[in-house]
Amino acid sequence: MRIPNELEEKIEKEIKNISLTELRDTARILSDRYMNAKRTGQSLLNKNLEVLAYSIIRMPATFGAINKALEETLDIYNPTIKTVLDIGSGTGAGEWAVLSNINVEEIICIEREKEMENMAKKLLQGHNNINWKNQDIVHSNITDKADLVITSYMINELQEASKEKVIKDILETFNKLAIFIEPGTPEGFNNIRRVQRLALESNLNIIAPCTCQAECNLPADDWCHSIVRVERSKVHKFVKDADVPYEDEKFSYIAISREKIDNSGARILRHPNISSGFIKVKLCNNGNIEEKTITKKEKDLFKRVKKLKCGDLI
Image 1 (tube, helix red, strand yellow):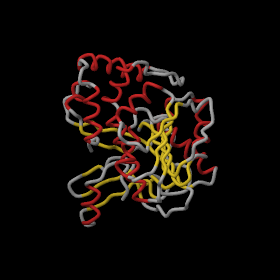
Image 2 (tube, one colour):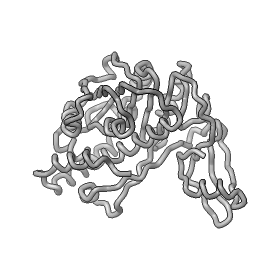
Image 3 (tube, rainbow, N blue to C red):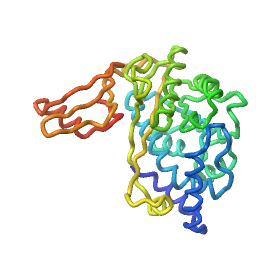
């Protein structure tokens, strides 16, 4: 997967007169800050250069995760969507994913950090159906509503005491569909499990990636995630000190609807273990965790599963 050409060109325009070495140094500082910061809800990006470095090192992977979650969800449930609300919109990765998949009338972006909002406005200049709202959703209520609501990599930035309030607020904002995306880590998946529980308590419907209407049966020390491979630009490789031309972004997500949907099936939980004559795969099959062995005798299924990875639906 590659970010849209227009987005790549606009990022390159923003860095045209900036030292790449300075951007790389700033990116290193940011990475250390995110790795070591305690989740207190504090701002981790304070300057325009930091936001620009963030746009280079994180925006492609964030776009890839949102785009894949959105594509998978729309394959299962594709209602008419005219309005979109992106909560914690950052530098606008979610907007690019929406614009790549849906023809919408209006997108509303809620973002607390003014520097992030300003960068998003630059990168999305010319897309006149997007409106921004500077708001701290922890200390205020969300009054906007939309057909589709997206929030990505945001719950994990909150203090533990704030998470339930914010999730409940978000579950009140969507008319048809809501998608929560979090890092593909145990902590990120625990946030998704919390969203799942609160959604079920509100009699909402889970449509992806889960294939049942029940709380997750995975043990507490296990987690479910998907992977998307994103191409790296030359600038991205330099700033991240990377040699390979791509990065694999692991993410966990959950999609929720108000309408009941038939989403039965089996979701791959771990990358298939492929041998010469068989494939072993761990599945979530309508809520049941099971190990399945697929032999070459099952010719069509064997060929199909051989190409799949964790998070994919059989």
